[in-house]
Image 1: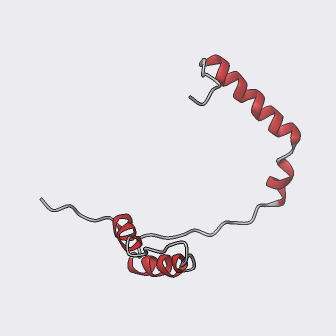
Image 2 (image 1 turned 90 degrees about the vertical axis):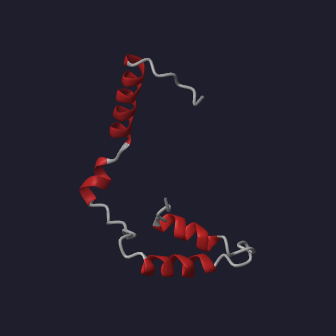
Length: 84
C-alpha cells in the first residue's frame, strides 16, 4: 500500500535539499511562499488588532485573579507544580 504524502511531508522533503541552510536563511521565505502556492488548502492568518476594551481589561488585577483561580484548580485536582 502506498503512503499518501501530506503537504507537511512535501515541505520537509523540499527542505532536505538545502544542505547549507544557515548560509541561505533567506531562502526559507521563498520556499515557504512557493510551498503555499502549491498547497492552496493551507493558509497563514494574519493577526487582528487588539481592541481598546480588551487592552484595558488586561491589567494587574485581572491577571492576579486569573492566577488565583489557577492556583485553586491546581490545589483542587492535586496537579504537581514541577514540570517533570
